[in-house]
View 1 (cartoon, rainbow, N blue to C red):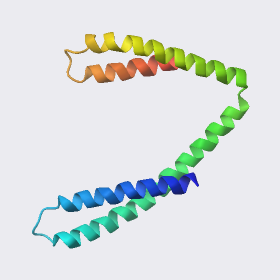
View 2: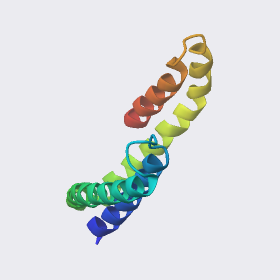
View 3: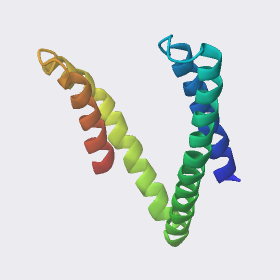
Length: 124
């Protein structure tokens, strides 16, 4: 069921992408209606195939996570979630000074904040 839901969403996204590309297709090669129809068909087909691949991978990941969490005691799982929450709260407090310190560098503030959240979330 998860595979089919993901397949549907990915197919719709690809079909919309095909419409967008057809609308911006340079005129003169083929008529805009033919380009619209062809690109919708091509991108919908690609979305259907890619949605199946992504859906099966997501289903495998969900099953793997389910198997792993069944083997962990509830006490251990609760402590892990509490640590994650504490780490993310600390990261929220630290992120603004890190962003301010890295402001002179063009793209560094965004990556610095993401890095702070990842590190402190993991350490928590």
